[in-house]
Amino acid sequence: MKRIEVKLSLSVVAPLLDLMKASSDVLEAQIAAPLTLDDIDADFRDDWKAELLQGQQEELHALMGLFDSDFFVNGVVAFDEDNAEIIVRACSALRLRLRRHDLKVLGDEQLESGGVELESLPAPLQKPYMCYVFLGTIQELIIQHLDAAILRGPSEPGVEFEAAEDDEGDEEIGGDGEDEKG
Amino acid sequence: MTRALATPTMAAAEPRLAGGTAPAVSPAEVERTKPALSAQGPWRVVVLNDPVNSMSYVVLVFRKVFGFSEPVARKHMLEVHEQGRSIVWSGLREQAELYAFALQQWHLTAILETDETH
Image 1: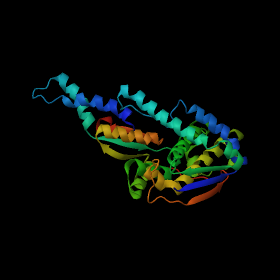
Image 2: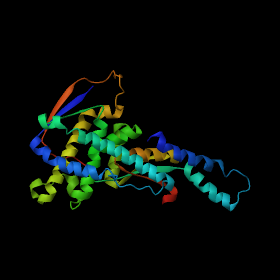
Image 3: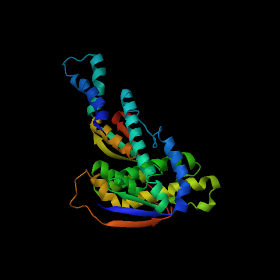
Image 4: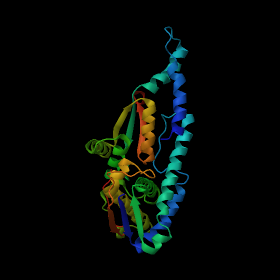
């Protein structure tokens, strides 16, 4: 099974976790992406929303679960074919929440260009922006290394894929950088 | 999407599809069969642009949800990015709902449209 371990800078990432947790808590009861269900049967919408919300909650629990007591000892988080998809989705949910709430004063073009200088932002925006970039970096790392696993889907217990790779990658990031947007 | 969510739609669609075949159709029956045609006719799954999800993420989602090849997924992603929207699938309503739900599970902004929507 392909697995990547990412060594994070504790001094950079630890201060972001409170904001991630607070945003995650809000998303316990609120779907992250804008939802338009006008063409869905009215009596079907509640089930639709409830199931989306349940999935989102599971994603966020998985993401926050990465930052357990072990993480605070060694600063390492690990991704493999079993958690890659759920973590990538959780990062998307949290980034949407950060963008719509904490970073709403920033323009779309400003965020999409990736040309935001952290130091030029007002102090209250710096942590949300770092968090936004950090989650985007995690996403890109997973997509870069584990996209095949995501496309294939999580493994079932006792099932080994013939094409599964058994290499183990290591990355080291400090929560900096930016990505292109779709 | 799980079976639990799909079931109410399927149950609701079956009675509609059963109606509207009599030779003499009353106005009431016309109204009753209108949703049936909508349920069967072309429904479009449309993905709208958002400034948050990265290009590589959107490509991955399209490949995962629809089984698109990388070039096809990339083409749709670029349509979303440059034109603000892309029709990623069209067909029967029930399947369109499944796809829209799957895209929303990935936190993309996906909507359903019919010809009647415009």
